[in-house]
Image: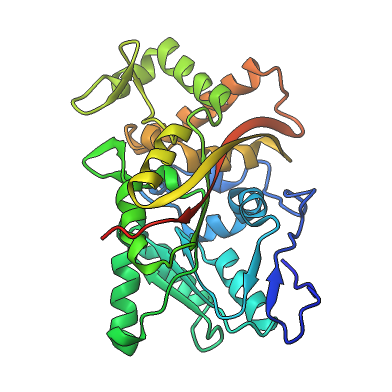
Length: 348
C-alpha cells in the first residue's frame, strides 16, 4: 500500500493503492524440496494452527490477492477506527496502520486474532511502542465486539468507547465456525457482536473462500481417499461429520445466501459477490505449502507419519487431473466472495 494525495487540504482522506496488484507472487520463492512441505511434525502443526513463520513467508499468497480485492478503491477518513478480524501474522494490519499514520489521519487500527501463537508473534514483530496506532488483541471473531469493548473499557473507561467505522477480514470468515459443529457458521453471532460498536452507516467488508473454492483441488483429494485403501480408514464417517454421497467431506465453506442472511439478522444491509480467479504458483513446493494451509480438516484425521505422503499423493493427483507438470509453474482456480455491507439498524 502507498499513500496518495486526494487533494483534500489537511490530509482528511486516504485511498488504498495496492502493491503487486498485477503480480501477487512476485518475489515469492521456496526451495523445490523445502522442509516445510514434507516434515511430518510441521504438517501436524498445521492441523490445528498455522505457524507464524511460514505464514509470513506465504503472506503474498495467503493475503495479497484478497487484501487487494477487499480494499480496492476504499477511502478512509480522518479519525476512523478500523478492525481487522483474523489478522494472522499482523503484517497487512500493521501496514494499513502505518500508512494511515504516515498520512496524518489519526486513525486507530485494531486487530483481533484467535490463535494465541499468531498474536504473540505479531506483538513481538509490531510492538505498540513502535506502532502507536496499532492494537492487536487475542480473541475469536464471533466475540470480537466483546473483545474490543473490554479493551476500550479497561484502557480508558466506558465513556471513552468510540464507534468502529469499518470492520474488515481477509480469508477469515470460513474459519468462523462452532467448535462443536464445524458445519455451523457463527457469522450471525459475529455481526451481532460488532453491531453495538458501529454507527448507522458503519461498514463491513470481508473476503473469504466460497463454497466452491478450489473445487478441482478438493476433488483430487477425495479421489485419492476413494482409490487408495491406505487412507480410507482415516476417513470413515464419524458422528458429527459432514457427509455427501455416503462419503466424508470437508465441512462446507461460505455461501452467498448464508452470509447475506447472517448480515440481515444482525442489522446490516449488503451483498456478497463471487470472484473467480486463476492463481499461478511458481513451483509445486509452493503450491504444496499453500494447500497444507487449506486442508486442516483432512490432516487432522491422519497420523503424523502419514501426513506428508498423503499431501504428496494429493498434489500428484491434482497435477494429473489438471494435466500439469511437476516442473515449473502450477495453476489453481480459486473462487471467493467479497462481502460489502453497512449497518442499517441497532441490534442489541
